Length: 405
Image (cartoon, rainbow, N blue to C red; front, top):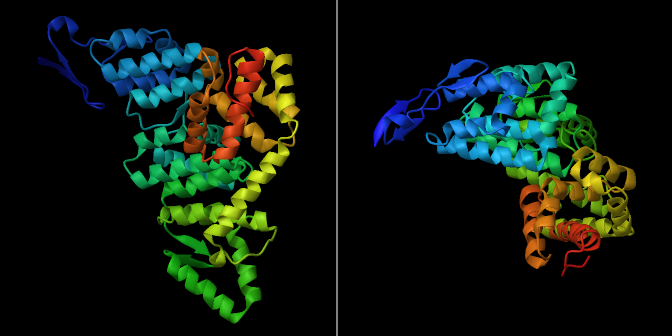
């Protein structure tokens, strides 16, 4: 085996058995490219032409003898596009950051810069709203795409993990953040700011902040209540500056636990609980109460969902139309809409069509996926998957189904 080429940037070591397989430059927009990262960056800036090069199979065919990684991710992108062309931009975006080590953020031909430049844009957006940037980041976070860019942009594992947590949390709690608050949280996390400005003082650790708050409590509970309002958006939701700081100093577990305890407050129906006195039993009670609320809200859902599928059969092929119909049919059921739509995004429709029968193995495959990727509790996930299997699989397509709702 002879070493034929060694590239800078992606450092692709190409080993071939003969000179006929030596890597040749890829011609894009009438220019030759030998460096993968330079090629991908040019394709990202020329979005339409870049998409066409990937989805037409040109990239796959060119690299099939010299680069298995590029060939595989290009082949997968082609398959995903032909299965759902409506998501072409998202599929191409995923390909950009899988196929290269590009460190700049691109979308539809626009260059939003490298990570420091993106942080600068985020900072400006916290002061004066940048709706285009907020909309883009909101979509990338909701689709769990932003972290794949961050992996390329930084070597810091803690930043990547914080962004993944935001992606997971944002999907679970859509009502908590509007795009402006999400942008602020991303700015704090990506800038890795480990200092928190609070009440005209600067804090670098929890102990100093805790000591200050304890001093206020010793002086006057009224003062404490007045000062701590700045740490929250409302009764329980944390201020994004405060939450981002906690994540940056490694308090991810505490932030996650706080969100669980927030559910305890809802379940108990109170606005003032001693968070230090909340027990694991309290959390279980809260989870049970949430489950009971969920099950009570789904009465009549099954028949209406079947009505939607039979009245608008083509809607399941159009992501936006389907989501719009869900919102029209079930305006009072945002949680259920999120579950049904999440499964639709996970391509449960395609899986049902390809199944010979729908059994518990099929059921638990998607229940596990919902639980693992979005933290959905088993009862709610089971209901949502069962609804799809029975309503669409059995009653619309006539597929044998062992599952019941």
